[in-house]
Image 1 (cartoon, rainbow, N blue to C red):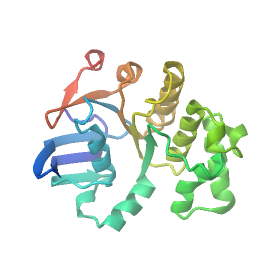
Image 2: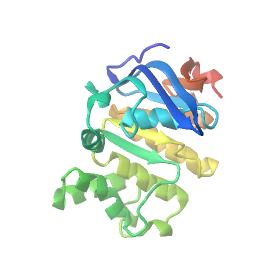
Image 3: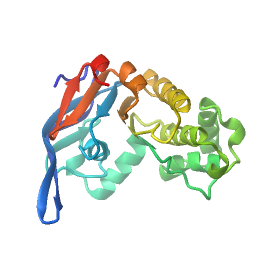
Image 4: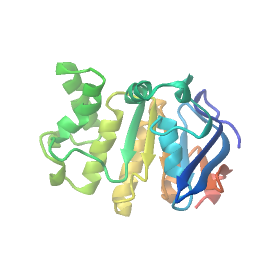
Length: 236
């Protein structure tokens, strides 16, 4: 598989991952070598259970490989303690999930403030940053609303604001339009593209959206434990 064109941000070096299930070992990744560059939009495709979400979990340090090394922003995740990985992830990674994962008892503004608070940023500075990001996703007027008062598309836009508010260099998105209708999903994908790749961030996305496949810099398919590169126009 060819390397990314930009400076390397995420590097998988001989990464394997297997799980023990019912007394048997299941190999999800098998000696994977891959590089994701700065400012790249990379789409991951593959059937259910093929290991797409595992790639995101490994890239973020949520999970560790069975063997091999993972480097993010020049640092080895595999050599960090769990606490070091957690702190590193809070500063450098933003997540966008299929099911939004908003805190229902917090307002929209309070949800967006969470990553800043976890990174020790509070007060007027944090509020200004959160309000500015809500403006970017066109939800400034919903700051005091609770998530259950928003549509699915609005909730996902809040989730994007939360993922980006602390200015991480890496955005990981796991089926971010899976619960949205086609038109709303397209708006969300356009927003993600504008706020990430055009800002020089690396976006690694699991999606089945043909629209996102069409604008990706690279399309990778999980196949028998390997990441296989495909031409975007052929990757439907």
